Length: 130
Image 1 (cartoon, rainbow, N blue to C red):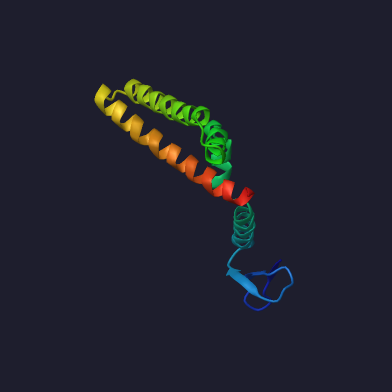
Image 2 (image 1 turned 120 degrees about the horizontal axis):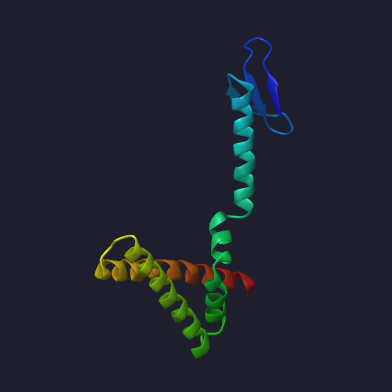
């Protein structure tokens, strides 16, 4: 809730019930900006962005299956995802003008980092499911 102080003419941002002042601003727009930032922060706490990004990666489902049931088929899917991703990154770097050795090395490093990120989230999420 945003109100204007009668004497100072400053804009005050209050809690919903009016019990505390969350911020004091020179303009209404600045108070509104803080209020919006608080709302965004509340939404992010409920649904962290890294989980959204990870869940949208195609390899996430494969990684989740691998964590739940580490058999040969699921291992092949995870390794295939890693190989495919490293090839895509390497080709992209080659197109951007990097030499072959640098492209392949950096493609493998980047793909490994992404797969570790995905597997980490899959492990964490599988523990929540049990």
